[in-house]
Structure formats: structure tokens, C-alpha cells
Length: 285
Length: 110
Image 1 (cartoon, each protein chain N blue to C red):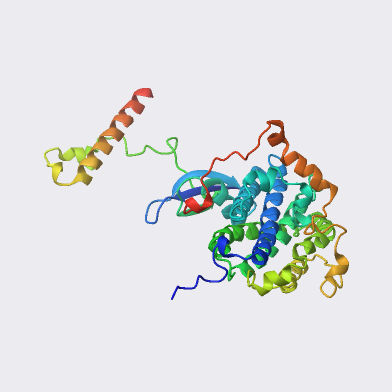
Image 2 (tube, each protein chain N blue to C red):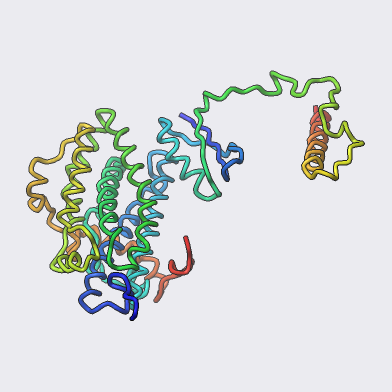
């Protein structure tokens, strides 16, 4: 008797419905990481100190690395890197609108609050993927998680220090008021999410992940003397911004960012992505 | 505030000074040091030390090694010894010879 492959098995084993569920989840993961990394790089040579500059640049590199791991799994289904990033219509990107917003001019608190809200959500999301039924994802979760720990620690340490004086706290409060609604879009989905849950590709639903995120982020913000909106837990949907991103509806800022991100590719008349590193499947790193 | 950073490549080896970071406190210094000094070279452990906590004594304050002949402190003082039986002794001897040449040259400069 043949040994049954664990869970959903290899990419070739997937039915059309299973594949659609896996792809939906991977696009969100990969696009979130890519676009956030792209935004972070705007701080390069502009962060408050050399040290904070390098730390955020390093975090951006980590996010690109994670995006690459997830895009690589999408390549199992035939797309290549250029299709996934440079040739893809900006309206087909599925990232949350939290990661595409431009930073308020020179506002380090914006970068830190955004990073914190995202990194906590990312931790919750990876936790929900640790027991995934899709082995290709399971193999990569650990690698991503160990780097995300630093990100969260970095954001948390900065939050504590900025909250320590009045001006810093005021800036954090403004950033929270502005960004919290956008952070909620990280937990938005569509009709495919029920299937993602049923197939065990993720072991927690979006609603339960949002609850976990509230449990961590809201008390922490309050412990720093920062206010979070009344009723956001009870009725998160009513706080959602106009564009949630997950459905392909993005802010105009995303079009600009996408344009900038693909500028060199277009200008050089490229038709494929330049590769300088081996395929993630061929390395142990 | 400046924190001096010391890197250890592998367990059991010395922590060696490798540079510094600016950080408001120890926790942030450890966080920044990871990126600035532990990212590209093999690293097992990092120490961060407040610069002002470091005590220094230099050639203005001290004549290192003394000023009279104390060559008995050196392995080369025991030239008749057959160093071949232990590689460490041979290594140490050549290290000290090199250090001695350097010292002579330094004196020559003065």
C-alpha cells in the first residue's frame, strides 16, 4: 500500500480548488512582504541615526527575503518572477493597504507604529501557518519566523522609548489613529477563506487571528499611554478604510509605488527578472 | 551614547573589539550591534560596553614591559630548548620574536 503524502501533498497533487486556495493565501503573504520592504527602503539614509537606518534597511532585506520564499512557491504553479512582480498589473496585487501607504513626511513614529502593527500580525499569521496542511509552506515558516522576532523586538523597543516623552507620545498617537484602521485590512479576506480554513492550509480563521492580534497590540499600546478607539474590537468592520487591498482595490499611492518599483525594469526593456541568487529550494539557508 | 562592541566568532574564543554603535541604552545597543557587527561575519556572541566604562592606560602613562632588560620573560631566553616537541612553543616563540622586532622598531622611531 502506498504511503499517503502528508496533508495536501506536492503542488502537482492539488485539485483546482485546492490550488486556488493555496495561491490566494500565498499572494497575500508575498505581496505584503514585498510592498512593506519596498516602503521601508524609503528610510534609507533618512532615518534618525545611522544605527536606526541600518536596522530598518536590514528589516527591509528580511521582508524581501520572505517575499522571495513565498513567490517561489507561486512559481511552482508556472509563473516566473517577472510575471509575479514586474509584469503583474498593480490591481492584481493582494497586499493589505497598511503596507502601501506612504510614510508621513519624515515621521519616524509612522514607520515604527506601522512596523509594530504589521509585525504582531505577521507573528500571529505565521503561528497559524506552522501547522499548515500544505508541506511546501510548512517547510518555510520556521525560517521566516526566526527573523520576524527581531522585527517585533525592534518595533517594541522603539515604541517604548518614543512613548517616554510627550512629543514622542503625541506622534505615536497620531500614527496609531491614522494606521490602525489600515492594519485591520490585514485580516480581510474573501469567499475563498472558508476553503483555506477547511483545507487546513491555515489553522486559525482570519477572525480568530484578528482577535489574537487585538489581544496583543491593544493592551501594549495602552500600557504606553496611547489610546485605541472605543469599539474597535466589537465592530472592527466599521473601522475599515475605503480600500482594503486584499480584493485588489488599492489607494492611488500604490499605483505610484508600483510605478517606481518597476521603473528600472521597464526602462531597461527587460522581459525577465535578473537573478543573482540560487533558487531557495537549492540552498539550506 | 557610544557603546563599544566586541565580537566572538565561536564559542570559547575571545571577544574581540570590532567597532561601536550609538544607542540610548543597553537594550538598543544590543539590537543595533546585531545588525552592524553580527550580520556579515561569523558571530557567536556580542558584548556591548559603555565607552565611558572602559579604563585606559597608554604609553603616556606607562612604560609597558619595563625599561630594563627582562628578556628572561621571553621564551627566546631558553634557546637551547628543543621546541620541536610542541608546536605551541614554536608558535609562541615566533610570535614573540615578531613582537620583539616590532618593539625594537618602535624604539627606533622614538
